[in-house]
Image (cartoon, rainbow, N blue to C red; front, side, top):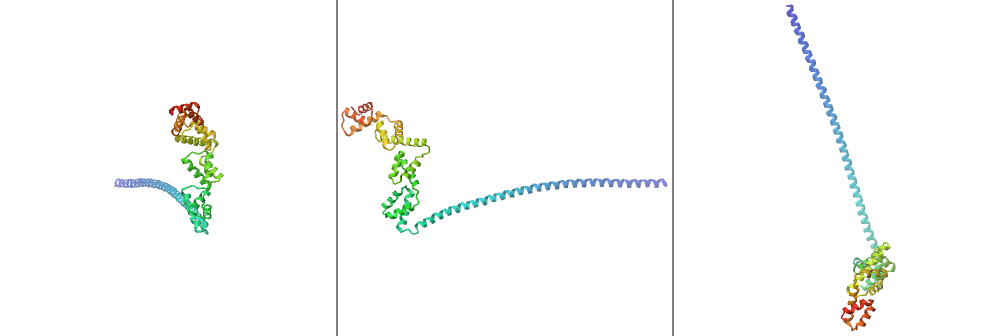
Amino acid sequence: MRKVKFLKYLVAVLSVSFVICGCGAASSDDEGRSRTRTSVESETDEDKKVDESEETKESSKKKDTDSKKEDKKETSKKDSSKDDNKKDNKSSDSSSKEDDVTKNATTGQKNALKSAKSYLSFSNFSYSGLVDQLMYEQYSKEDATWAADNCGADWNEQAVLSAKSYLDFSSFSRDGLIEQLEYEGFTHDQAVYGADSAMGTGSSSDNNSVTKENALKAAKSYLSYSSFSYSGLKDQLIYEKYSEEDATYAVDNCGADWNEQAAKTAKSYMSYSSFSRGELIDQLEYEGFTHEQAEYGVTQAGY
């Protein structure tokens, strides 16, 4: 009986020990799992914090960029507004000045001023040339003078435009162009300014190049409708105010055949008058052809 009770007692003890060990292991496993979960959750929270920090930085950068863009837009708008205000102010000043000019003007003066501005909008005039044009339109000298005084023209600039207009359809020496501008009513200083500006005078070498080219154009133009000897063409260019250097350059480079020029001149003389061979040779030599050129020309004319 005692052995049985002892065995029962032993079995009970072992069972209790087993239960206690099992609970301890389970508790340890649960604790390990809990620690693992806590670690993972902690790492996840840290990652979230890092991500949130990065997102915050990116958001801050975007806000800064958007803010700068808005600032630039506002600055651009302000600058544009300033430019518009300047334009408006200029327009207002111009209108105000015109109102001041015409405030006490007579009807004749106002109309003369309108006509003066109309002429200047499509052509070029000197001061005296504009006055003369208005007087030709039956405005009184007083009204025409008042209009020229108040039209706002820059007479130096008008001289430049006139000079360029002449050079567009013909060739001029510098002195010849100055003379032409003075003939149009520009003062000497205005004419010099206009000619130099239109011909592109910069360095002396540039100026020489321009005048030489103009002399060459003039020489070719003369040869296109008339016949000349070498010396005759050179004299003509000098008469047109080209320097001897420019005239010589033009004649040397115009490409003329002087024998052919002598023949054309001889035929021209024979077309309206009668000449003996000797007389015609003398006439051609008088025109500047050499004796050999004159003989060639006369022979080609039929002698």
